[in-house]
Amino acid sequence: MASIKELRLRIKSVGNIKQITRAMEMVASTKLRRFQDRAVSSRPYAEEIAALVQGLAGVLGSEATDRPLFNEGAGERVCVLLVTSDRGLCGAYNTNLFAELERFIAEQGAAGVSEEQLDFYVYGRKGYSYLSKRGLNVERFLVEPPLESVDFSQAAQTSNSLVSTFLSGSYKRVFLLYTAFESMVKYVPRAVPFLPIEEEAQEDEAAASRAVSDVILEPDPETIFDHLLPRHLEVRVYNALLESLTSEYASRRASMKAATDAATDMQGVLKGQYNRLRQEGITKELLDIVGGVEALK
Image (cartoon, helix red, strand yellow):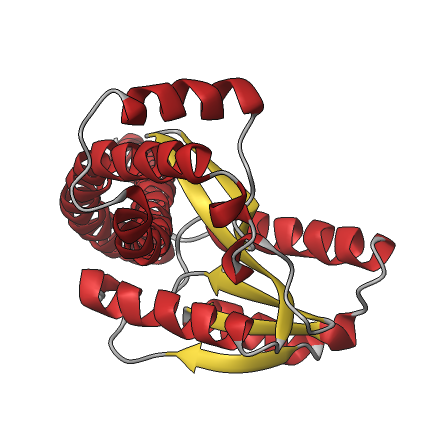
């Protein structure tokens, strides 16, 4: 059994770890609120622009769906924008994302796309490290600016780069692999198609088309469609980055809270052992004193 001195040192060490995890939990909570507000406030805009693009596509019909962005590219390769974290200590956030990545790779393999035909655009050092160890091709590692500092203009640049490589014939499909934020305790890794733009369900398209046809469009629908389409893709990339950041800090906050609670429990157990051992020492000393007094009588 540990001595009183060893227990005292262990209690102090656990207390120091508890202070660190509590501080990290508070930092994660602050950043979580900031990114959550941005992600939630951007959703109505993203949904509205997606509905408008969908409605205009319904109005234009084959004029829209015959465009290159609505059809598979000429290449044989597949590109994936993977969004991970730069740091650890965020629970199972990256682990779950990599599990979804492996499922996606297996799915592409079943569709005839080998691992050698996959190229990755990567946000986050954890993703870059995983892909490098896995032997997968990292086409571009987006390290500057850091993910936390990315604004809409940088997300737009990433989107435009993906669109340019797709239109050049390098890839036949482009995917986004990120973690969708659903609630404070639920964040789900997803691999969603980015290019070509997939047509929505016919009923939804018809409803959106009727909604667009009820308004006067100035200039013509085709011109508006050409201006909205790039912005729609940019918003999708930006939302994927925001939701990934929000999910990361929600996971980090939960992980640090669990670590703080575990340190509190461990401290309680160690203090109990310390108090029992200390009481045993005091009792032994009292018995020695009483025994000595009795011996002197």
